[in-house]
Image (cartoon, rainbow, N blue to C red; front, side, top):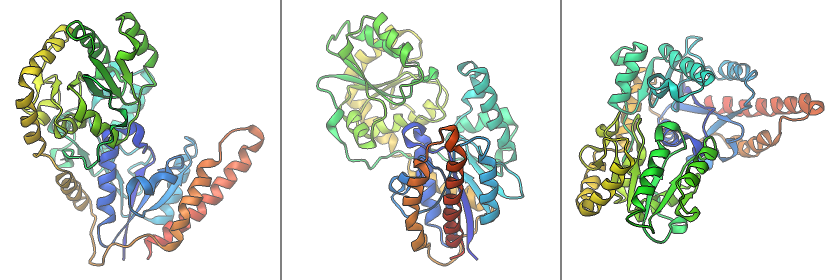
Length: 419
C-alpha cells in the first residue's frame, strides 16, 4: 500500500523565502524519487500555477485559499481525505498545520532569530513567531541547517539532541550566469532582504567611506526591499551618495545572481545573525571574495576562507575592502576549496534520515508520476488563484466556487495516493 506524505508548502514563495525555498526544492524532489511514497504538496493558491515549473517535475498538489479563518478547516479536510502517514514542513516550522491526530510531523527551522533577538520584531510578530517555535515541541524531528542553530533550538525549547537533525545547505549552484543585470565597473554585492539583522545601514556607511578612495565604486543589492525601503532611501540621501552609485535590484533569478557574484569586486556581507548564510557559499563558488563578521553560524560555514571584520565601525569594513585587494587571489582559492565541503546530496541524506526515523518506509516499486487527471491541476489552480476575494456582494459566490474547485483537485490527489 503506497504511503501518503503531505508536504506543507502553504507559505512557499521563492521570491521571498530565500535559502529556505532551496531546502524545500531539494526535499520535494527527494520525496518524489522515493519508491512506494506518494507526496502531495499543499500549496498557497497564488503560487500553485507555477509550482510544477518551479519544481521541474510532475507533482500532485492541493492549493489552499490563504484565508486565515478557513485554513484550519481546509487542512482538516485534506488530512481526512488523504490519511497521510507523515506531514513534512520543510520551510519554517509547521504552521499552519498542527501536530495532532496521531500523524507524525517533521519540520524545518533554519534559526532562532526571534528568540535570540526579539528586539528586531514588533510585539505582534514576536508573539506569532514565539508560537511557531513553541509548536516545534510537538513534532517528531526538527531539521535545521547548522550546529549553531541546533544548539540554539535545544537551548530555547529544551529539545532532546536526538530530535534535532542538522542538514547543512549545499554549496553549489547549477545556474548558468545571466549577465543582463551586471553593471560596468567595480561594485560590491550584498544579496540580502532589508531586515534589521542584515545591517544595511552599516554597509551603506562602509560603502560611503570606501568611495573616498574610489569614487567610481558601486553597490549592488538584491532581495526583498519593501519593508524598510523608505528608511533605506533616507539613509542614502543623508550620506550624500549619488543616486546611480547604489542599485537595489529586488528579487533576481538564480542565473542573474550567479553573474552578479562572478562580476563583483567583493561580497560585503554585513549580517550579524545567520542560521547558515547561503550567499556565503554561492559567492565563494563563483570566485567572489567575501568580507563578513565572525558571528553566529558564519565561521562554521566559511572557516578561514574569508576576510573577517569583527567591528561595527564602517571605517573598519572599508579598510578590509582595501586589504582584500591584496589577498584577492588567495581568498578566491580558499573559498572554492571551502565550498566543496558542502553538497545538496548530503543535505538530502540528512533529511532522508529524519524521514526514515519518523516512519517513512519506502517500498520496492518505482516512483510514479501523478495520474493523467492531475495534468488538469495547473488549469484548475490558475482559476483557483484568479478568484480575488473582494467585494461584499460576490464573496459568498467566490468562496463557493473556490470550494468546488478544491474538491475536484482533492479528488485527483486521492486518486494519485491510491494508484
